[in-house]
Amino acid sequence: MRRTLAFFYRNRWLFSRRVMQLLIIAAFAMELPEGGYFAQGNLSSSTWFGIGLTDPYIWLQSLLAGAPLGKSALIGMLIVAGLYALFGGRIYCSWVCPINLLTDLSYWIRQKLHIKSNFTLSKNLRVAILLLSLLLSLLSGKLAWEMVNPITQFQRELMWGSMTGAMVLASIFLFDIFVTRRGWCSHLCPVGAFYSELGRYGRLRVKATQSGACNGCAECIKVCPEPHVLAPVVARKADLVTHGDCTRCGACLDQCSTGALAMSLNLKRAGSFKGIPVVSQD
Amino acid sequence: MADKISVAAEIEEPERRKVFRKVFRKLGAATVITVFGKAILDSRPAPAASVLRPPGALPEAEFNAACIRCGLCVEACPYDILHLASWSDPAPTGTPYFVARTDPCRMCTDIPCARACPTGALSPLLTDIKKADMGVAVLVGHETCLNYKGLTCSICVRVCPIIGEAISLKPVKNEVGLLQIPTVDSSKCTGCGTCEKHCVLSEAAIRVLPRELGLGVEGAQSVGRW
Ligand code: SF4
Ligand code: SF4
Ligand code: SF4
Ligand code: SF4
Ligand code: SF4
Image (cartoon, rainbow over the protein chains, first blue to last red):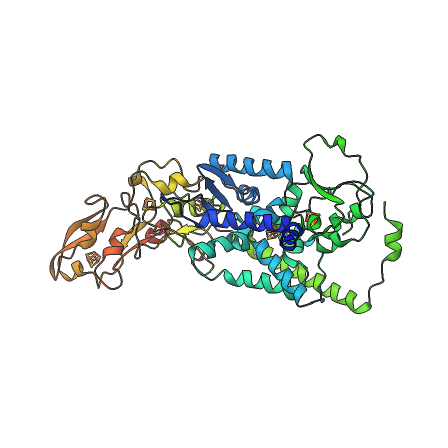
């Protein structure tokens, strides 16, 4: 009994995330008893009990492609963008995006199989893909990323039951297992890159609780999908993870045995942050 | 601001890796330029729709820019006629379309699909479904259509929801005798697809096509102007 409890405690963030991710998928897929759905549409744009939400990245592509402004999409976009900007953009990656289930599974298998080979990619690649997709949208008048986007593809294939897009998902899955460690989400996906920029100043952050608690074991860095964000904290150059790349997945908190890390919401101005320079180590 | 320690600690890269890196960089650049070039070439002239769009859809180029592939229209349609295109479908990935022969638009008077669209890709200005322009019916099978053979099938005319306006029988006299030819008024036809759906032949003799494909577009072809 104590052991199961301890097990859950050591994976509390992981389990919360899984529950959240599955609930979101279920909300789109499950019918209400009296008909209708919790959520309609897909992650590009959806309606939750009459409230419309729209993905800001897709909206931006659409705008650049030259679309006229639709009012409900605009409002929906502002709600979503506002929330992510306030709390932290890549919360989307850890708590909402269904691809995360797939790539986390890849990573898990990779570790179980002890695959060490790693084709190094620059983390800036995704920013390049992001900029390229925006530029292409502007030039071609189409939503460049939406031609391939595996995220909405995932939902469509799942829900409309066609199987062509499963190919893309399978390649991401295999790529993450055999080619590059966390290859897709941490190096290639422009959606993650976009949310990273959007949530640069997000106020929900991983924080070092007291300076003494951390014993420098760097276990958190090992499990973090974006290790460079934690490096300054463990090296005591900063007391907060300030980098936009942090997905707020809480893996570091699950992992840390000393309780040196906490997730903290600080809505006050940046002033309360002591301004210790954070060296981004790419 | 370079971190002295980390710079010193940097291990020198083996020669082979450097070469690989160079090759990959070149490959990357080549891919990017190709993708670019192709996108620019593809983007003009603006292509006509190759599939039937839900009612109120903007002209194809604008529609492709405006539609964010959310599928809210698909879910709003009470008859489930709409689909989001998958990779293998003729429409750009993720955009909604319907196939007349399988399931035509029932022309709901309250147009739930267009009402559900958050982006205006299906125009909110369309309030009268009879003004919708999803496409246009064209009688293509002049040799197979039963009415052309002198019979009176006329199913396509009788099932039309705007019967008598969008499609009607026009008497035409020829060597066979007096024929009743189903004739489409392109200014009234909404392209709902009901006629194509119900054509009694195993492949429909009347087809509903996006307007540009069904009627052609005026203007000289560049080949003719050398
Ligand atoms: S990086 Fe992209 S695919 Fe990965 S979780 Fe974030 S949005 Fe999803
Ligand atoms: S710092 Fe912690 S919460 Fe942020 S991405 Fe890394 S492991 Fe997840
Ligand atoms: S008008 Fe009605 S039947 Fe036609 S696409 Fe819209 S919702 Fe479906
Ligand atoms: S509701 Fe509008 S934006 Fe969404 S898929 Fe349909 S046409 Fe596109
Ligand atoms: S239903 Fe088909 S065969 Fe009959 S009149 Fe119309 S086009 Fe001709």
